[in-house]
Length: 156
Image 1 (cartoon, rainbow, N blue to C red):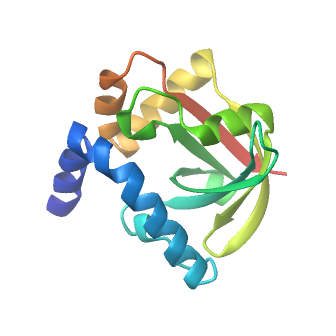
Image 2 (tube, rainbow, N blue to C red; image 1 turned 90 degrees about the horizontal axis):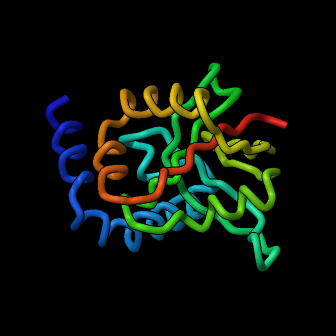
C-alpha cells in the first residue's frame, strides 16, 4: 500500500506529466509485442489494455497502451482521457469519437469493443468511481481547463 501511495503522489506531479507520455507508452508497446500480448508493464500497478483504434484522420490502426478500470467482471471497461494531466485531449480519444468500434488486448486476449463517451450523470458517476480507483486523476483534472473525457467500452 505504501508503494502505491508513493506512485500515486509521483504520478500526480507536473514533471511526471512531461516525461511519462514519452516513456511509458513506448515501453508498454514493446513489452506487449515481445510477450505476444501477455504482459503490459503498466498493468503491474493498474489494470491496462492496449487499444487498437482507427485514426480519426488517417484511417490507420493505432495501438495505444492505456490504464483502465474494469467493470462487470471483464465485460466492460472505463477509459479515461487524462493525457497525464496535459492540456489537450489524447489522440486515441479523438479516434474513438470518430470510430467507436475498436479492439482491445486484455490479458492476452483480443476483444472487439464499442466505445461510448460518457456525459451528464453517467459520466459523473463513472468519474467518482475512477477517482476512488486512482486518485491522481483529480490532480490531472485540476491542471487542465478541459473536461477529461471518460469512455465506457463494451464487448461487441
